[in-house]
Length: 305
Ligand SMILES: Cc1cc2nc3c(=O)[nH]c(=O)nc-3n(C[C@H](O)[C@H](O)[C@H](O)COP(=O)(O)OP(=O)(O)OC[C@H]3O[C@@H](n4cnc5c(N)ncnc54)[C@H](O)[C@@H]3O)c2cc1C
Image (cartoon, rainbow, N blue to C red; front, top):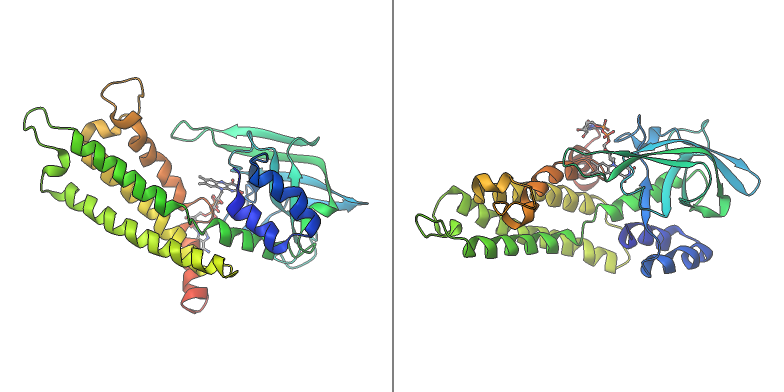
């Protein structure tokens, strides 16, 4: 929720000096917790069709509409959002990228419960919410391009590879300690398909790291990764799902348990939880199909379908 890599980077690229002073310092101090107001009930992959309306009134925009899937909105004290400021313009042109505190009058957050029992999502409603015009990042009506920069940073997933390698190391250590009560063997000591799968996950962890390093080296040179970020995002999120599948296979039937109070639940049930939660990672931040479209057109230069 600190969102230094995506909101922070977007403000650094498109923000004014005043916006940098106002928003970046609280971010790096860990004082601001951000949520993302992009998706709407009728606008997901086709994000440019968004309808949340912002009408200028003096020094403010007055915002009305609804966002959905706003992760962490119930915990956030700030929101970055895309709003329609010119309904007459072609759909990509009449959009503005706005920043707002969450505690202003007219914002209502309602929870949505996930299949993993987590309560991370929300619907967020805006009724006559006043947001200062000075909180628009980049040009008014050109926010689509600011929002796209944001997504490029969001999809970069540069920290994921480190976490994924660590997960595999933790699982390996656990499996090497656990011994079958009858055979006395460790689960990884048996030469069979799940062990070979585990080796594949290690190879993929190295690929994930290399993809991340490419994105990191671009960012370090001041470049904004685009299809490169989409490649990292597709690989990293689909890799998460493969890690979850392999881990639950290696842990056997107990691997499906999530009851943290039970002695039979391996490692606090984290793998079963990951099995459920990783499903959504190929949807969040733009689906794998959309990332593949980006790679096809901007990476490979293929014609639009
Ligand atoms: C865990 C999670 C967290 C999220 N957090 C947030 C958040 O904090 N803020 C926020 O604004 N949104 C958030 N979202 C929403 C997310 O950005 C959208 O779910 C996503 O962009 C897809 O939109 P949609 O669900 O409307 O699906 P749709 O756009 O309706 O897509 C349905 C299916 O059609 C496919 N499809 C659509 N268009 C094309 C195309 N042109 N080519 C090929 N296939 C296509 C999609 O890939 C998908 O399989 C989150 C989603 C998840 C799962």
